[in-house]
Image (tube, one colour):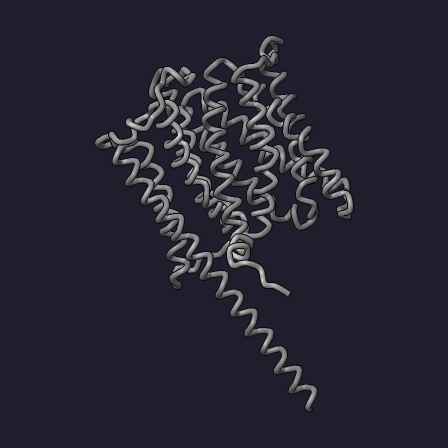
Length: 362
C-alpha cells in the first residue's frame, strides 16, 4: 500500500489552522461589505435578519443530507439551551456589532474584535475551561501573548506614523471602485458610545465561543447545530427588527450592494464560516479559535488599501508585528501546555499498567 504524499499529510494535520486563516479572510470581507451596505442606508437590524435567513436556507438542506445518518436526539432542555446560546451569542453580538458600526468605521470594528481573545481567555478561566500557571513558561507565554495581541491591534488601528508610499502604486484607481460613503463620527461622544457597544458585542461573541463547548458535547451534529442556531437567531432578530423598524420600505432588497452584502454575510460568513468555527472549537477549544481574530484586521487593511486607496502607515506595520508575535506566543504556550497534558496522561496510563501487573503477580 502506497504511503500518502507528505504534502497531504501536512495539510491534514494542519486543518484547524487552515480553517481559521480562511475564516479570517471571510471576516475581513464581512467588515468591508457590511460597512458598505450600512453606509448606503440599510437598517442594521434588518441586515441581521436577512443575513441569518440566508444562512438558514442554505444550511438546512446540507444539514439534512450530510448528517441524516447521525443520531443526535433533541430534548426540550437541549432545544432551550441552543435557543439561549443563539440569543446571547449570535443575536445579541451581531445586532450590537452593526449598531456600533453606525458610530465607528470598518477598520475600528476590525481592530476592536481583537479584544475577543482576551475576553475569551478570562471567561474560559472563570469557567475552569482554561488554566494559566505563571510558574511555567507556557503560562507566561499565554499571558504575555494576549497582552501583545491586544496592544498590537491598538497600535495598528490608532498609531499612524509615516505613510507607506509603495502601496499607493499598486492600489486600484478609486474612480473604478464604488467606494462606500463612510459616515465619520459627529462627536467624541458618538465614538465613545460606539466603542462601548462594540465591546459589548465582542463580549457576547466571546460568550458564544465558550458556550459552544458543552453544547457540542450534547449535540455533536455540528451542521445541524449551526442551522438551528441560525434559525433561532433569525426569529429573535426579526422580533427585534420589527419592534425597532416599522417602515416597510426598509425591508426591500434590490440588486445592489445591500443584496450582495446580505448574501455574502448570510451564506459565506454565517453559514459556512460558523460551521467551520464550531468544528475548530471542538478540535482545539474556544481560546485557540479566538486567537486567530487579529488576522482579520491585517487582511481588512490590505484590501482597503488596494480597493479604496486607504494608506497604510509605519505604525500599522509595527502593530501587525506585535499582533502576530502575540498570537504565536499564545499558540506556543497552548502547544506546550497540550504536550505537557499528553505526557502526564501517558505517565498515568503507564503507572496504571504497572500497578495492574503487580497486583496480577501478587
